[in-house]
Length: 96
Image (cartoon, rainbow, N blue to C red; front, top):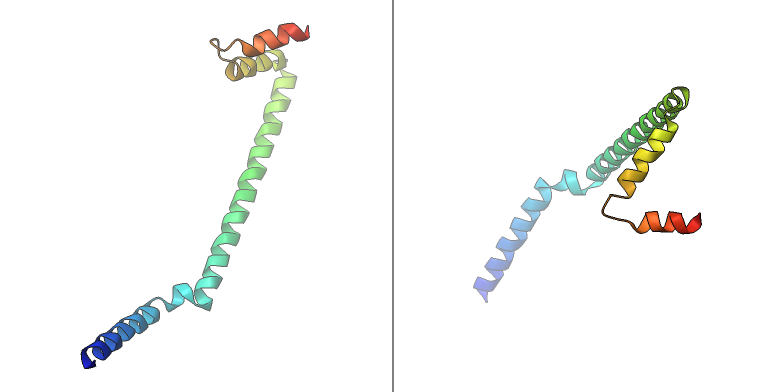
């Protein structure tokens, strides 16, 4: 029984040491750090989305000004409907 008690004490001591070493990641400080990280990544994602929206607006404006919209639409159709896939072509013909 004394051996079991000693092993239990050793395990408890190991756990207490681990908790002390990792307290900053699991305690209030760790939670705050996690929220700060998430907030900064959310802001970064919002900023990237804003840049993407601006670039899409520039592209749309460029295509309209240079009368490239028809070519762009054809390009998109080709990308969305590869030459081996004739299902969309048949659907479009049926709609006509």
